[in-house]
Structure formats: C-alpha cells, structure tokens
Length: 315
Image 1 (tube, one colour):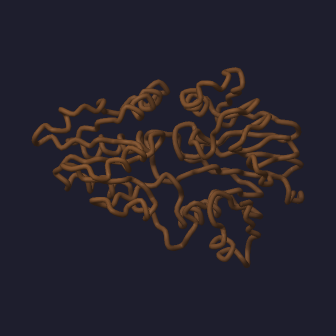
Image 2 (image 1 turned 120 degrees about the vertical axis):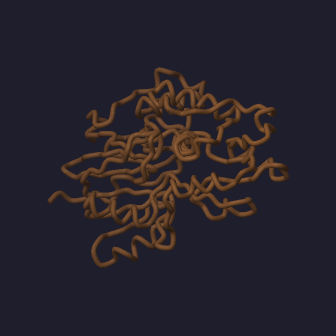
C-alpha cells in the first residue's frame, strides 16, 4: 500500500498548496496556478495566472471579476482527466451549487479527495453530489459538530405558507438564492418571488446553463403592496441587514447558522453544507485511511475517529 504524503497539501498564506504539482487549491491571494472548487467568494478570487475549474464556475467568476483576463480560465468537465505536473486530477460533482466540484488528486498511487463545500440534500438547481473512494479525505468541517443537524429543507420552506404576509427573505445571492427560488416555486406555489437587482443576473446565468424552471420577477414597489398577494422579496445579506427596521414585512434569513436567525420574525434553517450525520455517512462511503479537515473545526471528528482513523486539521 502506497504511503500517504503528510505534506501533499499544506496551508500557506495564499491558500492550500500542493508542491508535487506546484498549484494551489481555492487560494484567496493571487497565485500562478489555482484549482477552484466553486464560485463563492471564500473559495474563488481573481488575480491568478491560471484558473482551473468547471465551465459554470468560470462563468460565475467572469461575471463577478470582469477584470480577470478570459484566457486565464481553463475549464474541465466533470470526470475529465487532466494533469498538473505529476498529479492526475479529476473534478467530481459536489452538490453545493451549480458547477461546484470536489477535486480528486492522485499522486504516486495515493488518492487525495478535496471536497470544497458540499451537501447531500437534494437540490434541483445543481448537479448532485457524487462519491468516489479515496485514501485521504480533505473535508470541509463547517458544521462538523454532533450537536448540529440540518432539518429537511422542504419542511422548512413550507413554513412560509403559514405566514400570510409579505416576506423579506435574506439569502446568499449565488447558489442559495436559486435553490430557494426552486423550493418556493415547488412548495409555496402561491407566493411570487421578487428578486433584488443584484440577484437577478445570477438567476439569468443559471438559466443560460440549463436551470430554466425558476419562476421569478424583478423587484418593484407596487408588487410588494398588492393586497392578498404576499410576495417574497429575496435580497442579499447586506441589503437584508440594512433593512433591520423594515415595516410591513416579515424578516427571514435562510441559513444553517443559528446566530443568523436571531432578531428575525421566524427561523429558516436551510443550509448548503453537510451536517454531522452527513459527514459520517460520507466518510463511510469514501473509505479513507486518513481525514484532513479544513474550513471549520475538526476536533469533533478527531474525537469520533480517535480509535479508527487519523484525523488532522490543515487549518
């Protein structure tokens, strides 16, 4: 059995670095060569010499970072093999948002699987999570806590049906907003979805990539004031926070984080990350020899697997 390289991926100020291929994974500072798992701003940043990612991720990054030269993007389909240096790489659907990818890296007979952000819940607006075997699982640990369990998103979204009142719905503009629109369309069909102007072009980008089932309208004041209609006005976090004194609407924020539910008119726990039980199921199916944790706290996983698996934090 080939030996796992403890330094295959290490944290540097720029991001996670693989010296065996001379590339960074999800770097936050400009680097020569970046592998980007998905288009959220805490993973995808501009300024790199080369960006390797899925076509959808490139499209979202081009929209947000229009000064990044187009020739710096190299896009790959899911499962399409490519190499950087001596590291063989494939992108695997992560289920987090449209175009999100796990990064499977193989070097000297050992498979290292970097999850990026991922979820196991169903989502009609993105590719579903796929599971592959790996020797080392490099997993996000955002909600890696036995005390955290994400509820069924359908059970959460139908709570809006019991609120006959206009709703100001806070949501991250990319990924979450499109998923929420689909959930509302299907399970709250009487509620019109009105979009903030900053979310609207992202819905249109989704449509250009085949997610055409979403029903929504641009926000306008008149639609919010029609008696008996009770629309849902979806806004990004900064706008939501600036409307903390909004009247004649119910303030709701969709998130898996408990602290983001405070001072709102109702709780709406809808997360695009794995919870504790999801991670345990995922580990079982991936079958790693070691777990390396990123983006969160890995101590609960280290304690859970202390007698069976090596678990270390990459920070």
